Image (cartoon, rainbow, N blue to C red; front, side, top):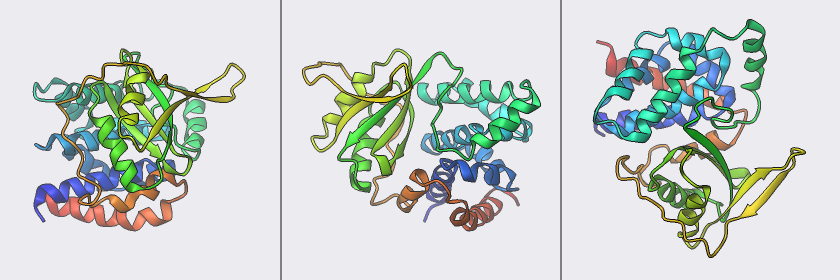
Length: 276
């Protein structure tokens, strides 16, 4: 297996583990994982960089992590480099900018706010909800047919082709996908792309004024122009992806016991790869 494939394997595993709120503190406290993610931000493979950014963004969801992440050697500089690099795809730059803004403001909140937010890391994951970045918004989709890794792979491919999609995560147990998109992208574009698979049907989940959830179907006769994203490379097909068994890590809360053994393995890989 090539060194580049090893890097992609590790960063994808870290990304999937970081998707579980119960793993985020342990990953940041680990001596090898956070420095390794920072090094991945300078990797020549844009797919590795983007996956590393997703992992860092997950970790930054936990407010208790932000001060340590901000102070980690090379973190802020590497984010700046991604933002300023002319070869970085647009969505990659936007995601790096969003993380930079979050970490830059770390320490400005009062101590009690950080304490309360630490408890929120143990709640069900809400990907990027409440972000202060006005250039992006979050759309929650309920997807009929999202039953197995093959269908999830189809959905991933459809979403990755849309210009303006920044990131997304799946909640397979409830057949949902939480998508972070640019503010100028219409949610109907997501529905059009997913419905074009012919085996998946997407509907938008919205909240009413009283907080109740409402599932709203996209208009069948809607002719939304979906602009394809040609900048970000496709993820590995599910059958080739070394992280295909990590589906449960994304959708299941409480996987910290299962994940800690793998964190040790990841740390050993990072030590072998980056420290001489």
